Picture: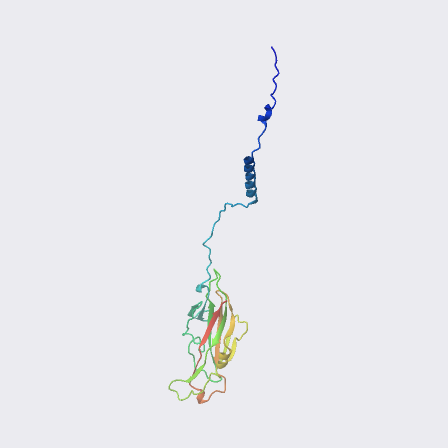
Length: 233
């Protein structure tokens, strides 16, 4: 057996050498650039989003605020009128200058007095909580006129007839004390603050001072509208 040593021909290793390709290098550089842009976030991203369209809240309505007036004390005589928020009502069955809400014995100069108590309440509910309000009283324009068919009663008693108002829970009592013209001038007068479902009893005491016994001051009907208001912010 013989062993032969095989030799490479000169120049035979050229086929093992890698050839330089410009296109291959350009493709590689492009791939690197795309990868770099993706990492830095400069390319467009996929986004998922949710829009919430049903978002609302409702403010409290008229049922959350209101004022009621009843014959007192503690409203035991029944409700005369109720006004919800933004509305007005009229109470025509409680005479504040009468006796227990009704026309009483005619006042005598220097004599007794007529007394009527009314209960004023914030009708707002407590669950959910309603609106707290400030209660005021306003004396309207007083009028004085003879009793129909009487030959007397020509005097104007609006500046003579007195009324005293006391209310439970008021910051100051009496809330008012003076003649009816002065009541008008001082109005509106703040009574107290009423939270939802809270109430106050207001007592009106009407009298005619002594020294008013002339025929012109007899058989006189004195009238004055009175308005209670509950205001909430």
